[in-house]
Amino acid sequence: GAGVSQSPSNKVTEKGKDVELRCDPISGHTALYWYRQSLGQGLEFLIYFQGNSAPDKSGLPSDRFSAERTGGSVSTLTIQRTQQEDSAVYLCASSLGGSKKTQYFGPGTRLLVL
Amino acid sequence: ELKVEQNPLFLSMQEGKNYTIYCNYSTTSDRLYWYRQDPGKSLESLFVLLSNGAVKQEGRLMASLDTKARLSTLHITAAVHDLSATYFCAVDSTNTGNQFYFGTGTSLTVIP
Image 1 (cartoon, helix red, strand yellow):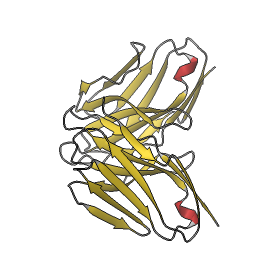
Image 2 (cartoon, chains in turn red, brown; image 1 turned 120 degrees about the vertical axis):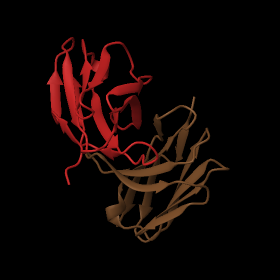
Image 3 (cartoon, one colour; image 1 turned 30 degrees about the horizontal axis):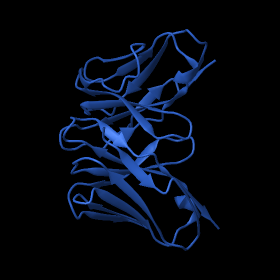
Image 4 (tube, chains in turn yellow, purple; image 1 turned 180 degrees about the vertical axis):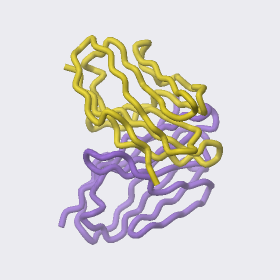
């Protein structure tokens, strides 16, 4: 079946511009997660959605970062006024939620801020 | 703050050898996950360990969990080149809701 998809796969932007990253989770998965992975580093948790609500936004690094999820499915992560330190791979994952928490990851969006 | 530490960070081993990767975490958690990441790729789920004493095996990889010691191990038996990848462990903290905490990763290179 279809896995988690993300778009765009690559994004190059200029410092100060806004970017939107999209995640389509696996159908039926109620939980959705965003992570950031800098080059050669581990995963940094950004935000978690259960359905359309985001009970845990604690990982968002600044108020330039925001995310929403509509219809319990697609999610967008928006970075306003991008900075060079925002350059990273942004990974989305989804899971069935509840006690079945194995996360299935998308291919990621590679963001480069010049 | 919950910490998940992996040891070693980098591992170079010859084909046919055995080795163990360690994952220590600092808070109560009943669930531990192992993932594999190939260069330039996303993460692939390997194992989910759901209780103390859980052991799971797939091919040349075997994972175990000791919740009392807050330790998980990923044992590699008779390594082959195809196992070269970065391996991450992760825990979800029942104390802090649904946030997942990932280890720093262990970069494994298997040399022919």
